[in-house]
Amino acid sequence: MSDNRRISFRNPADESFSTKLVLVALSLAFLAFFLFLPLVSVFVEAFREGWGTYEEALVEPDAWAAIQLTLTVAAIAVPLNLVFGLAASWAIAKFEFKGKAFLITLIDLPFSISPVISGLVYVLLFGSGSLLGPWLKSYGIEILFAVPGIVLATVFVTFPFVARELIPLMQDQGTGDEEAALSLGASGWQTFWYVTLPNIKWGLLYGVLLCNARAMGEFGAVSVVSGRIRGLTNTMPLHVEILYNEYNMVAAFAVASLLALLALVTLALKTFLELRFGAGAAGGRH
Amino acid sequence: MEVKINNIRKEFDRFAALNDVSLNIASGELIALLGPSGSGKTTLLRLIAGLDFPTAGQIFFGEEDASRHSVQERNVGFVFQHYALFRHMTVAQNIGFGLKVRPSASRPPKSEIKKRVSDLLDMVQLSGLENRYPNQLSGGQRQRVALARAMAIEPRILLLDEPFGALDAKVRKELRRWLREFHDRTGHTTVFVTHDQEEALELADRVVVMSQGKIEQVGSADDVYDRPQSPFVFSFIGESSHLPVEVKDGAVLFQGQPIGISEGADAAGDLFFRPEDVVLTDEKDALFGKVTACRRLAGTRIAEIDIANNGHDPFHVEVEVPLHAPVELGSEARFRPTRWKIFRK
Image (cartoon, rainbow over all chains, first blue to last red; front, side):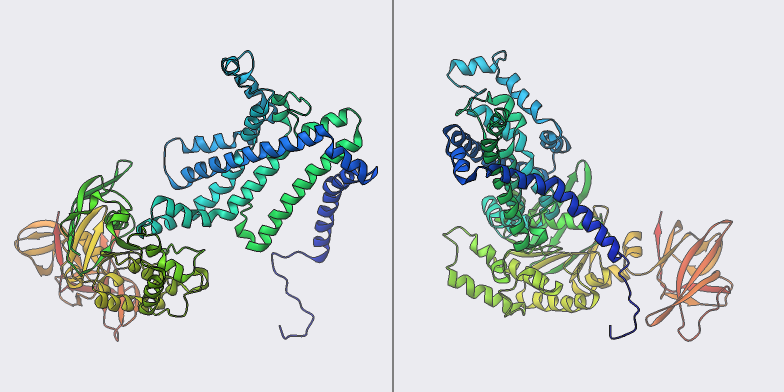
């Protein structure tokens, strides 16, 4: 605008400066109080007695076993859910079949029921009073109060993440690109590899990140099936609670800070992906 | 490649999208499938490509029963309505895709693929854009990339779904002409789907007019415009009006009154005529009604006339009137069709 008169036209969807200020201040204050403060306090508490004590709390055998177990569980659960999520969203987005709506509802189930119930389901399935439990035990396979149970519960709780991220993305993209690839002579695998996967890779990565964050942080379902045997079936979140209940604050917060760090790295990665590849790339629909 | 479609039926959840459709396409022909949405034209195109399979019937490519083969085996070039270019690949990668995915035995070496891609880019006049991504191209350019990509696999037939549907009017006209030249140069048997009759009539050797899963008429532009074989074709192609009439002793009667035109055998039916095939007259035996609107349409002037219908909603017809002598609104106009067709009930 070359006009120098002091008439300013405002975008109709825009707000006045004071409104903006209030809104921004409000959300910042909220974030500071409910998110930032607790997060900082975790680290402050963890380092209260210095780096040496912090390090000691982490390399202590039980803590170290918990860290290893958490990483192992995530390493099994996340790839499983990656495959499941891809298969489910592929089926839902690209094909028409009966019971599709029901399948979508089922995928959401872990989001809508309490994690404690997710754990109890496996106790009922594999506990000593069940049919499966004793039968498997007779072959020397322990599910409950052992690593397999923890993996099962984690897979159950985290399986919507990848699928939920991919379904809207794949539905949005439709089947046009795949049909084009097929008409050009590509096989099913080539179509998946060269066309479908590149189209969804950022959404997929984002789903995997979220899935991983939850897999490492899951408390409720895992606490029901794990039995909390120190050094054996204790994951990081469970270990934190045990330490806390023993008034071992520094150690509890040290392990907690490591968990928080994992979450922060995940968040940073996600932000990086969004910045690098634009808002559309990382999905972000829920 | 000659294409024969024999008694094709296609059902979606018991709804018949195509019902007993047969069509012969000569080698090198440019054919338009024309119809309103829901007429089954895109379904027919997808069946020819092998992207869908018929419920009954067969499709032959030459002597070979193509309906037994998958889309990959049929080796057809398909250009999608929204192009379906691979957005993460460059123009060159898009065009070379069909060659790259061939089994190693029949896959040309990389240098050969590169040369073929560059030849195709020349052909579609997009040289220099090989490293662009689809979202850096205009609609018309994307369309031509999609065409080059389909041509790269040396298809036996070329199938285009609403090839100009997503383009603006000017680009559409240019590309239309360009496609005709392209077809004449390469000589591929080509089938394209459109709902735009102007496009179909201008571009195609023969037009297949479809409605509700059936072929209404197959013929040249002149055939379907001047000699429509069904009420649907008459009203779908070009402008037209129709009135219920009776034929008695050779005279055509409307509401029991002669209107000054004659026809062979006695019958009842619908009289169809085009706005330009009408003459204004002062004679008593004629159609007449009240002029409700008079509008300029390119090089002509069209009057809208309401003909009274015994207290029911009036019949609405459109007739062309002389450009220099507009009729007055609200006045009575008398006219007779000079060319018409009566479809018997």
